[in-house]
Length: 111
Image (cartoon, rainbow, N blue to C red; front, side, top):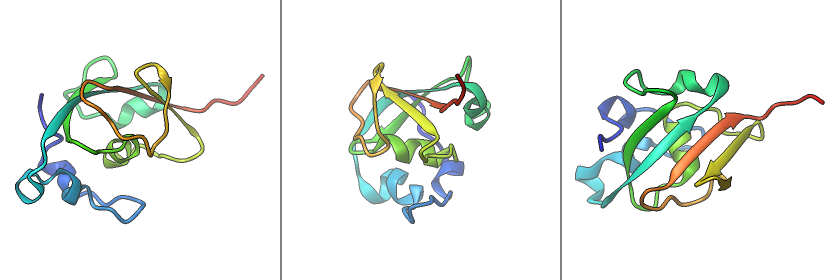
């Protein structure tokens, strides 16, 4: 699986954590795990160009949280996001495990 790449390494996050620290394998010497990211509706525009069908396979360091992956791609992670991990309700703070599928879409209002 491809890593998120050097263009991702320098992006700042809203919580003051730098993805560079999280994804710089040479500095951190962390083992990587494969995860799949699925973005829906207006969130699809945040996927890298090589993504197909709203899905992107990537490798992240062990211990990475779902919100960190989303923030790294500049997906707005706030009260207006619904996160599913392996088809179940998830949270930005949830630590990802090998093979997890993270799905995110904007919350919708209406009736």
